[in-house]
Image (cartoon, rainbow, N blue to C red):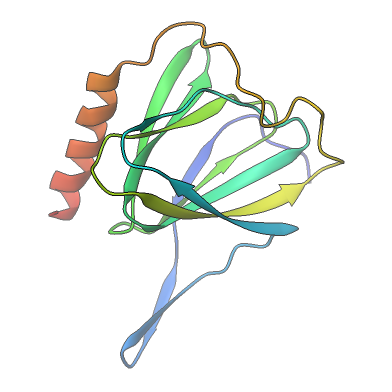
Length: 146
C-alpha cells in the first residue's frame, strides 16, 4: 500500500448495542493519548516516518494543516466522532481556543524509526488566521447542535 500525501478526514462507523455505542478501532503500531490545553495555539511540526490518526474523545480543538501553501482549519469534537489521518511530511499543529482542555487519541502508524527532527516546532511560513479557526469550530458546533 503506497502512502498518500494528503490529509484524509472520515467519520467512524459505529454499532449500537444496548446502552453502548461501539466505534471502529483504528489499526496502529502505537497509541498515544494527547492532551491539548485550553487556550493553546501550537506551533507546526512534522513527522517524517509516521502517519497520525487523530480522534477526539473529550472536548474539541482545531487541527491546523499546511498543504499547498495554505492552512486548512479542521475542527474536531467529541460530539462528531471522526478520524483525521495525517501522512508523513505534512506540517500540522493544534488550536484550542475553548476554556476546556481537549483529549484525543493518536493511533500512530510507523513507517520507519522516528526522525531526530520529529516533534520539533517548525517556523510558521505565515501567521495562523485565528478568526478563521474560530469560525470553523462555530460552523461545526452549529452543524452538530452544540
